Image (cartoon, rainbow, N blue to C red; front, top):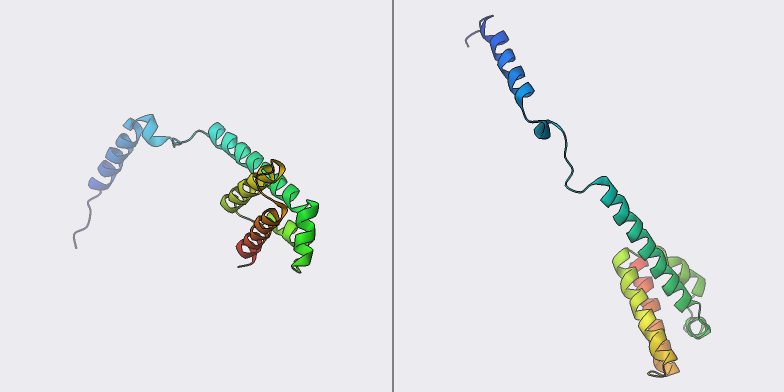
Length: 133
């Protein structure tokens, strides 16, 4: 193995240092693909959407028809309501939309109480499966 001469090491170091100093500032500085302000805005929007979806689903589950249907099927309504906060964002959004559609159809007379409670029980089962599976 050859030994590096004393002249080559300082020369190589000087060359590397000059390349580092001449490098464009953008290469040296870290640039973000997404600005921090946009990330903060997206997080706030996501949080607000999640809170709205939780409120919708918990409101649906607290309806007297849903409470009665869960008790008739031997399901603890409080356990289901607590499980809502453990759903991931995608499941929460999907179930909140289903519950909103069911409430709207029930209020508008498009579906009867039997179908409404059946939809409610399906939503409850999906919550329990998503959280405890």
